[in-house]
Length: 45
Image 1 (cartoon, rainbow, N blue to C red):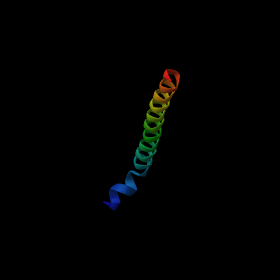
Image 2: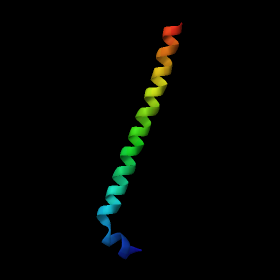
Image 3: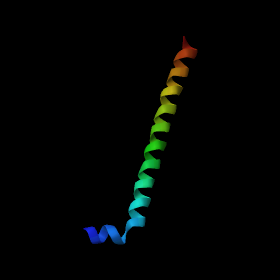
Image 4: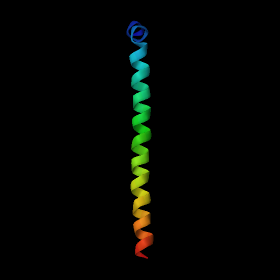
């Protein structure tokens, strides 16, 4: 296992970075939907 990690360090770092960015994008999309719902609710009232 240690040999695999030492030989593929670049791919591991790229995967962790990609997962981090995907998490940020997912959070922002979810936040945008919630804000949109609140805006619709405020316009309705």
